[in-house]
Length: 154
Image (spheres, one colour):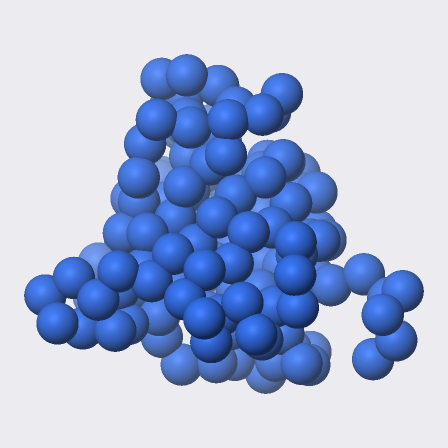
């Protein structure tokens, strides 16, 4: 992929065994993925657990929706450094340009509980940060369709 091509991201809201969000960032033509139980936030003072899960196929998962999964947000991202190297080093800083998520974020590997799949997702304090931010019920639907999860009432 040429360096000038924008990198894509998607955040799915997913009801599997529990309701959670999946953050997926394009890295080397796959979507590197984290399950974020509480979901991303615009509050720079909040920290979110992000558990790295298996990579997903890029073309199959950018717009995939079904009765258990919606595309909660999608767009492009700009990493501060080569994303593969940054992830291997355990810290990736990036700027999102999505429908709901905008501005700088950072993922840092924590190895909490001795598990190197555990990362922390934070919103960097920038012009898009909103102290005390909480998503509303109206914010929970798909940005691609009128689809909502059944747990949201349809």
